[in-house]
Length: 158
Ligand code: SF4
Image (cartoon, rainbow, N blue to C red; front, side, top):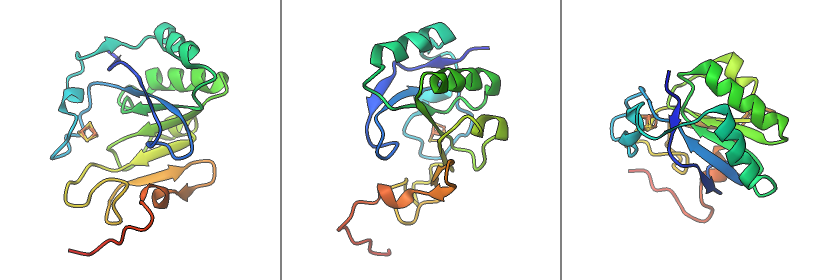
């Protein structure tokens, strides 16, 4: 089975207080209305992410990153878990962004952070007070959505 991804990028905002190497995995079947990343729906799009080239990407950025972030990939549980364990063994934290409302326990025990919930354009993303999505620190069980909302901006209910 394919486990393809887009070229990974360094991101600063998706996981608060962490510098993350972000792998967007293709083959998403959640089908959120208004999805901004429909290129991720095609499982054949992107390059195969093997354990070997995953390790090579991490080696390239080792010392610069604190976290490995997966955008999707939970639909291939075992393959994703292998990558999470590799990252953890290298001393990195792990995060998964999923459009599902729950994450399989076998995956979540290898995660430090998770974002759950579909994209809903009427409710907005993590930076919206009305969002249906949740960003959770799995070490403490705390929801960290407040860290995504810019201070000083008053939300006016429509
Ligand atoms: S989970 Fe993400 S990539 Fe998948 S359909 Fe929803 S917004 Fe798009």
